[in-house]
Image 1: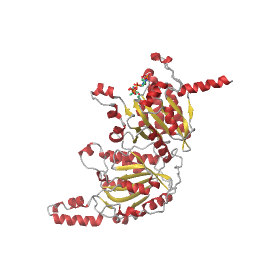
Image 2: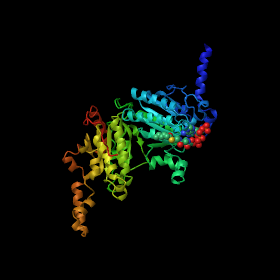
Image 3: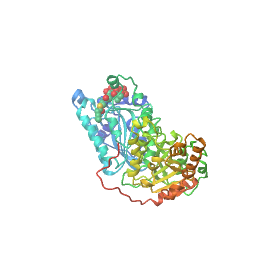
Image 4: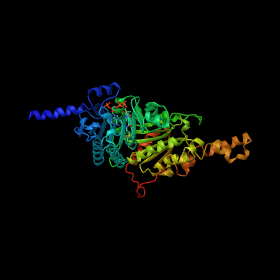
Length: 510
Ligand code: HXC
C-alpha cells in the first residue's frame, strides 16, 4: 500500500519539475519565476488546487512521442485571493516554451468552462511561444477553442491576462480578448510575429523590446493596461485588482470595510481650481481626496494621460472613476482618450460598477491628425459607452465643460443620475474668446469691442447656473463637500434599476 502512495508522490514531484531543473534555472536567470512560483504568489497560502497535473500531449510528429512532460506546459487550477474564488492558469515556459498543444488547450478550456459555469474570475499568466509548432492544426484548433470561450465569458466574469515572458501568436490573441492585460517590464513581450519574421517580411530591424515590450504596449499601442517592475510586483498588484472586482456580472460588488469617514469634508479642495482658467491643476488630487483612503488602481496610466480611468472605493464599495486631466493637453478629448475611456466605462457597466466622472474638458482636439485618425468614431465610442451604461452615474464638473465634450462626459442628457458642478464650473458651447470671435466676426478688427463681447459671454456662460436653471445640473456643490455628496448619492442609487431595450447586441462604432 505504502508503495502505491509513493507512486503518486513520485509522479507529482516529477510533474512539478516541468521541463527540468536546468530550464527552471534558466527561467530564474532571466529574472522570471516559474509557473508554480507565480501561482503561489498570486493566491492565498495553501489555497491552490491543481487540475490535470498528469495530462500529456498526444503528438507523434517530429519524434514528439518520445518527449512527454506531465502537465504539458500549463499549470491550471483554482484557489482564493483574500478568500474569494479565482481560477488560474500559468504557462510553463520550461516545457516546450509554454507552447500550446491540443492537450494543453483542453486544460485551459476545461478551466474556462468551470470559471464561466461557477461565475468567478479567471486569470491567465502568460509566458509562451504560441502554437506548438510540431502539432500543426491540432494546436491551431486548440487556440480557436480558447478564443471562443474568451468571447462567451466576456462581460460575464472578469478575465485578466498577465504577460510575464515572451508571448507570440495565439498567446497574444487570447489576452487581447480579455478585460485587462498587464505586463512585466524588461521580461515580457507581445507580438503577433517576432522580430525575425518582421525582418523577412518588411525588412525592418527591431528588437523584441522595441517591437512588443511593456514600454511599447503601455504607451504607444495601448494593448497593455499597466506594467510592473517584476513578477512579484505584478502578482501582488493582481491581488489588489481582484479585491476591486465583482466575481461576475450577477455578483455583488466586493466591500472592503475601512475606517474612512464619508461625512468628512476637505477644505483644501476649495482652492484646487487656479484663479487663471488656463492654468492646469492635477485632477488626481481630487480623485485621491475623494476615494476611500486615497486608494486608486489606475488603468492605462501611461497612455492617453489626458483622461484618467481607474478603480477606487467609496464607503468600501468599488467605483469606477473617469476624469479629464487638465495637466495633459488641457484635458482635451482626442481619439486615444475616447477609446480608453469607452473601454473602461463599458467594463464598469458590464460588472455593475458605478461610475463617477470628474469633468474639466475644453472640447475635442481639433486638427487633421485627429480627423484623419478617426476622431469622430473614437469620440463616439465614449459617447456611446456613457449613453448605454445603466449603472449609477455621478458627474461632477469642476471647471470647463465645453461643447460636445460636455454632453459626452456623463451629462444629464446621457442619463447621468446625479450631475453636480462646483461654483467654478463653466458650461458653454466653447470658451468665451472663441465664442466672441465667431459671433462678432465683423467686429474682429476692433480689439476693445471684441474684449467687451468676450467679457459679456463669459459673464453669461462661464458659470454653472445657466445649466442649473434648466435642471441639467442637480445641484451646485461646494468643492469641500464632494466626497460626502458622492457617497450619499451612491447610497441613494444602490437599488437603481434601468434597462435598455432588448437587442441581440448593440453596434458600438468600433
Ligand atoms: C514548440 C517551442 C515553441 C513553439 C518555443 N519552443 N516556442 N516549441 N512550439 N511554438 C521551445 C524551443 O524549441 C525551446 O525548446 C524552448 O521552447 C525555449 O525556446 P527558446 O527559443 O530557446 O527561448 P527564447 O530564446 O527565450 O525565445 C522564446 C520565443 C521563441 C520568442 C517564444 O521561442 C519563438 O519565437 N518561438 C516561436 C514563436 C512562434 O512563431 N510561435 C508560433 C506562433 S503561430 P528547448 O527544448 O530548446 O528548451 C501561432 C498560431 C496561432 O501561435 C494563431 C491563432 C490566431
